[in-house]
Length: 87
Image 1 (cartoon, rainbow, N blue to C red):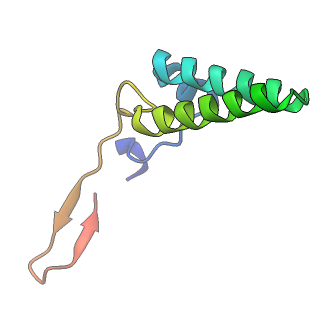
Image 2: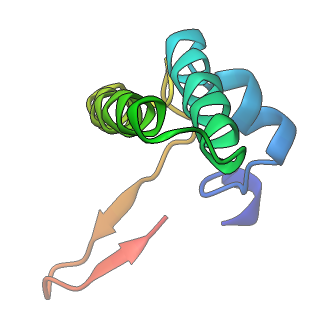
C-alpha cells in the first residue's frame, strides 16, 4: 500500500506553493491592519482599523486558500461482506 503514494504528507513548501495569490494578499492586509492597531492609534483611527479588519477577515473566510487540490489518489476495495479496505 505504501507504493501507491496515497495520503502523502505535504511539506510547508508544497503548501505555500499551492496557496492562492489573492488569499495571501488578504492575509498580508490583515497583518498590516493588526500591526497598526498595536501602535495605539487615536479613537477614530482605531475604529476605522477595526472596521477594516472585520471586513478583511470576512473576505478571507470567503476566499479559497488553495488554487488547486493536492495530487493524491485514494482508492478503496470492497469485499463481498461489505467491509471497505484501503488499497
